[in-house]
Amino acid sequence: MSISKTVLRSYKSEDKEAVLNLIDLNIPNYFAPSEKFDFQNYLEKEIELYYVLLYEDKIIGCGGINFEEGKKVGIISWDMIHPEFHGKSFGTQLLQHRLSELISMKTIKKVIVRTSQITYKFYEKQGFVLKKMIPNYWADGFDLYFMEYQNLEH
Image 1: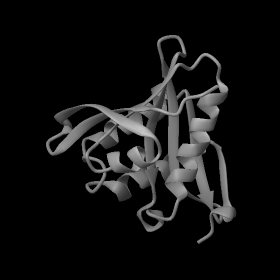
Image 2: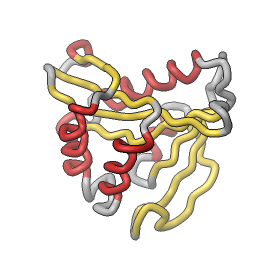
Image 3: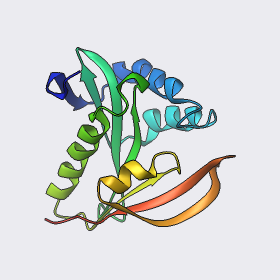
Image 4: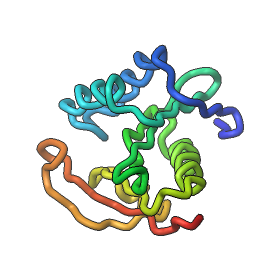
């Protein structure tokens, strides 16, 4: 599998079934079953910028950007990669694209991610620092790890 065979593009409504399949494939290892409803609601009502990652024309990943404080805070949101593609740098590619987008926005003063104990090490490797942790925040056994990106330079 080569990252050079990937295409990253903006999410379209016709991608909904494929990205809902991605969350199904990542439950219960990375998301609690109750989070599927939240993700569906996000897709229908809360998307600001959302991307899909394709490998050989198949959606294998997705992730978004949302904003707070009048676009001063960028939020990395709803990242997921097909389990067959974990550990092969596809998640890094998806995250780096969004970080580049945020860094290019002069209004952005801070980039955060709200993740869990399962994936926080991934974000830590990418330059995020843990700011706080709340046990059982997302669901029983799924803690909130609130992290901030430390390499934000315009």
